[in-house]
Length: 464
Ligand code: AMP
Ligand code: ZN
Picture 1 (cartoon, helix red, strand yellow):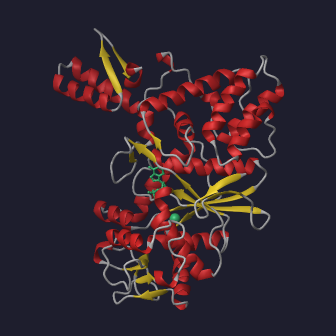
Picture 2 (cartoon, rainbow, N blue to C red):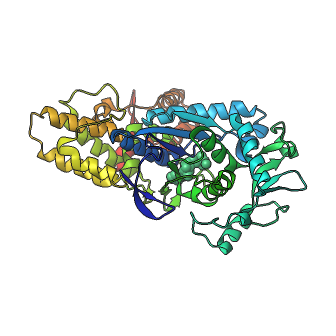
Picture 3 (cartoon, rainbow, N blue to C red):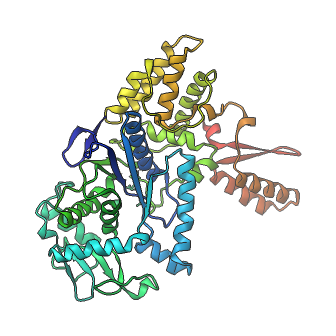
């Protein structure tokens, strides 16, 4: 298959460089809050890439890390008074639940940063030995960017831009050069009990080093592909290249795969802007993870995608059309990818996926193909359709028709509030009832009261 590579700015064929297993490293979630559907856009595209490679007959080894020690996770542990592990386990568990609901294949290796401190220390030690790093008076360790002339090649930022960007982001003053970045952060009082011993003193690793150390430890010095959202190009991936190549003397990653952002009203969906939707929010509005996955696959991964409820509704309608076609086809036992699939009439859609993961084209071609298929659907046509659904990881067989209220799933939380509101109303506690009506509206549900009962109507249905 072919895929665009951020470093060379060209579309290149993917092949395992050892002739056997394709090793891909995906930067995973920072577990200090619930992952939002922007994060999942990136993880779904990585999942799709793995599925297309597997379907093409390439064996894949997929590693995704968990960032469970950094400024944000530590801050939350200190502020809530709970152990760091309790915090990160909690968010990791919810991440796993959402990932499963979105039909993401679990990575073969899920590497936790906290569990790899010795490997990170070892990596930093080698960089110090080779004079690519230095220790500051406060016992932190910094990477010496000037020792790696290729720095900036991935992001194509020039020296001046690098300095401006890093100055904005940094509050450290002990560096030789403003572009240098932390490999090891010396213990500070605000870190509480979260520090580890090292040859340079107590502290903790910087963020960038975890990915270099874990990729090298689990996948080897040169990996086939490294992936993340486009915000990671600079500084995270630029720094990873510098550290890794200075440490090993080898090319770090042969291919760089970056996903454009999911936007809300033209701005990146992000935890810091607070404009995010989680899968929970989506389900509260009556939409399913399967519909969310379809929506997130509907745009090309190199184009930003603007999230709207209308777009999610369109995804539902498209899945309903697929469901109609799938009615007479037995549902497969699982929706994982299958090697050596036969695509028959769906070959052009399959080829679109192999060609730089062109999902909008592939989905369009599926609908064109459906129109050409005579009923009853022949065995090869059934097979091709199932193979494509397994490759995309979408499930038309579980798709519910949205045109009748009795098939609508109302989230338990919404039912509970509606019920409490009804009780408040019966007791003539109008203030509470009104407050709960607003609460339900905020969750996407309108309550319609009759003499002795109430009905919940999803807002999305009212605007249609
Ligand atoms: P984080 O949990 O912030 O470390 O992010 C996990 C992954 O999600 C990274 O690969 C990010 O680049 C990616 N990501 C963050 N925000 C978005 C967004 N709005 N759209 C697509 N990917 C995103
Ligand atoms: Zn990373």
